[in-house]
Length: 293
Ligand code: DGL
Image (tube, rainbow, N blue to C red; front, side, top):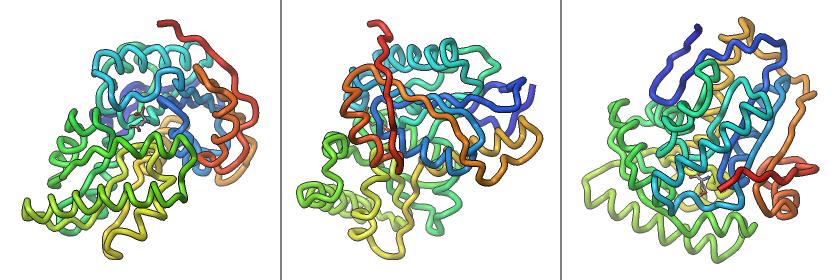
């Protein structure tokens, strides 16, 4: 069994046994396509199967038990039906609340990579003051998974739920005055809370896979010296480290012959229509799947 820096968010050995690994990517919706985009850029030679559990989105307002049940079903679909060798949990909420349930749902040989630990590691590398801000869904914030992961890296994290942002992004209101105003209000509150707590934050972690689409808006509204950490990028870096380690050689730079399959549990037309904004290229055909109750 191989292992590479297996922290709380990685598991499995993923000896793929084949030259071209299949990477299963899972999100509650299609925000996780931002993670897939980062993955394809770094490992264009792999095959990808992406599932968005659009019928049951949002996860961010649901209980740990429900999120764990839903996430385990998607994980099993990717491993049993799509033959995924690796699983990337491209959803902060599922990574925060259901990572153990996902690992238990699939064979130990499948490497499972969440987005929280890579995000915290990247925050540690970026922060000079040791104080970071994290924005995420309600469920992720209340799990305090980021605070715990940041603490393990010697950082102090102030977390804030921004529940209005996911529906705005899902609606495609990326460059929209309403979205900008909502972000401004959230950031004003967060920066005021940080000041009241005596923190001197120099990093903002986007702890939700929908938020990278709003990065230019965040950039305009936070101090120029503050770094933005996109957990999608950090998780993709982590997976590539696994691939390089498990396959013995670094992935080739840009073969661009990746094979991508897309699945959703509902709203396939919306996925096909809006998915390209997240992926940066056409999504093509999205297959409807029924994961059960
Ligand atoms: N994908 C989720 C995340 O990254 C946000 C959407 C949801 O609430 O399901 O936390």
